[in-house]
Image (cartoon, rainbow, N blue to C red; front, side, top):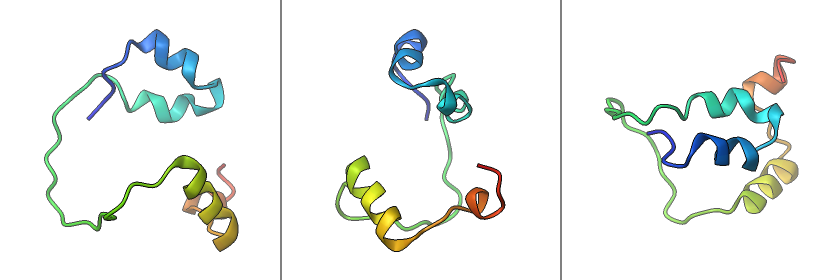
Length: 68
């Protein structure tokens, strides 16, 4: 896990409000998956995912708790 890109390039590509999300991308490290999880068969673009969120009215735990 983690980002291969240069950190400056990542900082330029993503605006400051996403900073909390980016911190978890450094440094690159190995991860062991210890619990089963579901994975979709097909890739989804960010636009497709955002359409799903909007149409389904989905809210994350943070959004429901007012932490976003």
